[in-house]
Structures are given as structure tokens and as C-alpha cells.
Image (tube, rainbow, N blue to C red; front, top):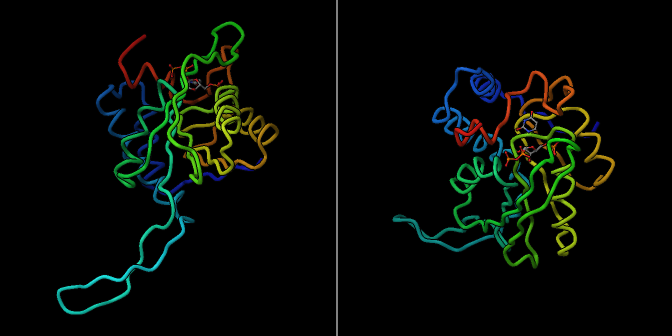
Length: 207
Ligand code: PRP
Ligand code: URA
């Protein structure tokens, strides 16, 4: 399985708080934003830099700045919305696209209902979605980006099941997967075990 598990102690601590069933929506959202920032710091490590001439109050110098087009962030609706602000805190100039997908409760197959992306030319993209269960939604989201000519895609999730990782590895071997936790399995309803329940419902307080 090709997946990078970001198990920094702060991330593990916060994921445990998110898993607890008594954690309410407000805390759940805040923790998700914090973990996204911690993961985002590491995921953006390979951004390219260029020299920039600046003047400090003391002297002239050559500093560094991120080069090229800024990143595209693509949340998979709804739950991926909970990870957007964390990424924008790190890269305020990133463009944000949206892909609307829901899992059919019977077949567990993803159903597309929305897709709006920024200018894709020369831009790298990070798809964000807290849950990677069967992998159907993430695989469909990656396919949608590729159909629009996007070549450099990373997938950032909070909790993954081995089934989901294996599906992305098989369907899109070029896409690197970053997760905060790799859980044991899926249950008969396609929920991650032990997981954290339905991420969208916990973020937005729905049932
Ligand atoms: C959740 C989650 C993922 C998907 C993961 O969304 O946010 O998008 O399930 O499952 P998969 O890997 O088996 O496809 P959901 O369909 O519950 O929609 P929601 O975010 O609107 O609640
Ligand atoms: N979607 C969720 O929100 N949670 C799961 O465990 C699986 C899919």
C-alpha cells in the first residue's frame, strides 16, 4: 500500500479527540482545521521556491518566495469543506474548486452533482476529504480533475481504510495519498472501523 501516514503526536492526539462520539460539531470543525494545517505544512514541503530581491530595514537581500502558480485546493462536498480553511490559512492565495459527490447508500458508488474548478493551467492540486472509505468518491474526484487536464494531484484525507488506499493506488498510481490515520477496515455499511462516524454529519450537525 502506497500511503503516507502523518502520525505526528499532535495529529494523533487531535484525531483521537475527533473520534470520540461526545465531541460536538464546533470542536470537531476546529480540530479538523487544526489537523489540516499540520498536515498541510508537510504536504506542501515540495513547493518550489524562487529568489526575490527585498530590502529589510537594515539592508538589501535575496529572499525566497513560492514560485509559479499557486495551488488549487479541491474539497469533495460536503465533508471536504471542513478542510478548506486550514489550507487557506497556509496558502491564502490558493484557488478553491469544488466537486460535489455523495455515496449512494445502497451501492456505495459515488454520484456526481457538482464540479466547478479554477483555471487549471500549470497548477498543482490537492483534493481534500476527511474520509477515504471504499475510495470510490476520491477516485471519481481524481478522474474529474484528470479529465480537465490536471496532472499533478495529491490526495489528503484524515482517516482512511485499507480498501480505499488500495483503490486509489490501483486506479491512480500517480497520486500520492496523505492520511492522519490508517484504520482497520470497513463495516457492512461501508463505514470506516473504528473511524469517526459520518464526517459530513459531524461537521454540519446533520443526521
Ligand atoms: C463521505 C466522505 C467521502 C466519502 C468517502 O461523503 O466525505 O466523500 O463519504 O466514502 P468512499 O470512500 O466510500 O467513497 P458522503 O458521501 O457521506 O457525503 P457528505 O460529505 O455529503 O456527507
Ligand atoms: N464516509 C464517512 O463520513 N465516514 C465513513 O466512515 C465512511 C464514509
